[in-house]
Image (tube, rainbow, N blue to C red; front, top):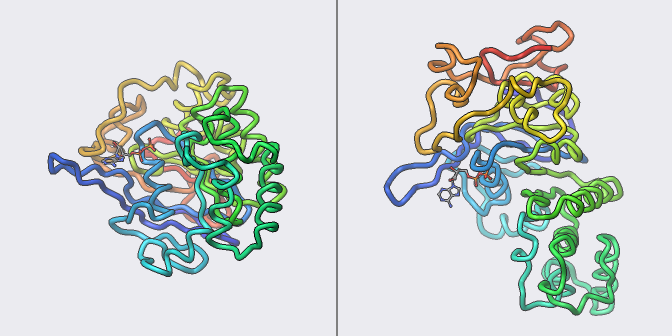
Length: 335
Ligand code: ADP
């Protein structure tokens, strides 16, 4: 359990999401996740493909209903909202997706894709609708004179800009970006990240930014939450996660990026093996089957999130309020 913070916009607590599979097995996609996002903050959510990141995102925007837990957003529990109450909250929670082209309706002109939310949620005259759509296109770097074209006439990077404009049209309180640059060329990735960073500063956006790539997450996040096989394993400021990673899994992810941080030894961190199946997660610490630090306790006892007190170079249980760095590990690496 991590410390309570001020100005919290979203508080996820004890979130549990499972999928029932055809063979009657259950995939434990998200287990007991708790975290919060403060207003104006960007929280990066990182972990290997299949660890549950998209499931977290889809559950927050209620494309999925959680098995249990709460998702408190502006005083309401999204986990249990239904009907009109859920509909009313939808514009405040917008999402941008990995595949920018297929997330836009191919038959519609991009101007109409962007204006869709405005038409539903804001009572604008046709002229005001055009003006607002033009403003949004300009804000994301698309020339408004191209508004009558259809999505397939744009590049992947341009489509992602259009997806961002569409999401921002309804002035969301929280923007969830699910692998928004993974499908794009590296040079275009940087442009989209810069655009999001710029929009965040100009509009004071609050974001949950999901990626399997710690280098991408680092460039945009204020804090980073690392998850493994449906569980949180470490959370902290971007600086703490990058320079003082305590969880062997975080260290392994950092060792794998093209320009590893000085805080990790590339050889120490190399990840071996595959992510275990979410239908039968390992006992104790879910990472123990791939962890070079694992001992008996790791196989038997599930570690809980515990504050890392850097000043004392020790694990500190008492003074949780003043630390923003937590790790779920029996043998954290304290530097
Ligand atoms: P990530 O976004 O980190 O790649 P996901 O949230 O997509 O991870 O998946 C988490 C786990 O849930 C995986 O084991 C995946 O196979 C499973 N899963 C995801 N979507 C479904 C689904 N629609 N039906 C069954 N299992 C799913």
